[in-house]
Length: 269
Image 1 (spheres, rainbow, N blue to C red):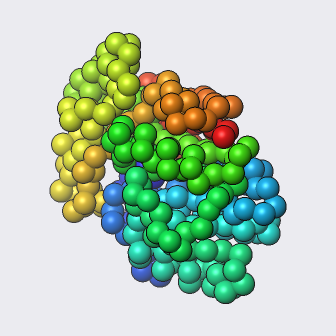
Image 2 (image 1 turned 90 degrees about the horizontal axis):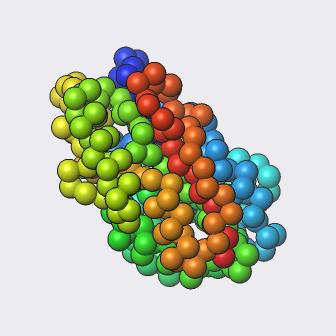
């Protein structure tokens, strides 16, 4: 998960072994944050539960979206690529794990799910996840998820857009970067942000040495275009039922953002 802000890093707190920056909880690998609000697509994700097959949150972090679904009595699978996050979820929802309402497991897209992760699923949530993947990895992940979803199931994706003005970003870097992104998008590139010169990395930050997410700061942030994600869903066999740009309510407002910092898509099998 990512946010856009000029103020990130001004207030750092540590509580129960978790590091919070301006109210946002840093992930254990320091490559993102769990935002302070639910995914804007969480209701669509939950509403797709068919009463039998569980819904899945991939990149669950510390389980914010998972908790809302559990409150509604829904069967949930929480997946993440960091075992430390999974341990936090198991502690936080110990009762639900013991009752079988919640299954917790390791997953690292686009790799196949392990044997203990049982599909098919009613719906899948990928909130603030796909911008950490290359285009080919997104394509392969969508094929995997289509295969593990019930007919009529839904996939909900929200991610950072090419208009995101990242926290503490160097102005000259952003202007040059954004112009290249728009040019590639207009030229019809399949993944306009999937280019070595267009990944948002530590070099985009004015002073990365002082950034709270060091030392693992931005190996790659692959900002998305709405058209790219919609097209990828269709290639994987999904029908696009929602596609829009906007902002995640958990993003810290940044007046330097020149458009909509997020993309939101929902596909139906």
